[in-house]
Image 1 (tube, rainbow, N blue to C red):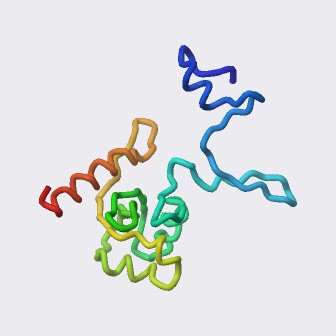
Image 2 (spheres, rainbow, N blue to C red):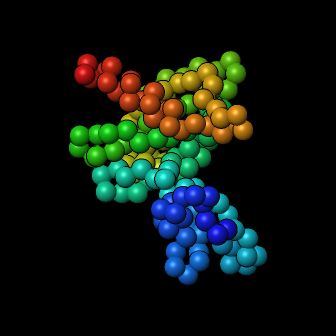
Length: 152
């Protein structure tokens, strides 16, 4: 790739002087087979009290709950920790759950700072035309909910 069409500033941010394209994707290379395993995106990192938390890691853990069909985690503001996780959860058909049940599933199994502080349940996620979840819309929904709860 030579650059973004008519976007010199974005090109300069993404392509370093040696010609490497920095996509923001995170991954690991298998030392034996040489395969690249996608592990997440830099933009999907939460900063909880100074600790980096991979949204994808927390989402993957939430999927181990037998009632969870799909989960997405975003960061929301927190007065003490700067940012904390909020999980949006779609349950499997016919299942019901509570925020407490989902959070209890995490306790003692993942680091405390990785456990989402809030859980919201959705019937379906906002999607793009190509089938990707629109996390920015989840963030908007979370911010509206936080404002409503705080009365501001």
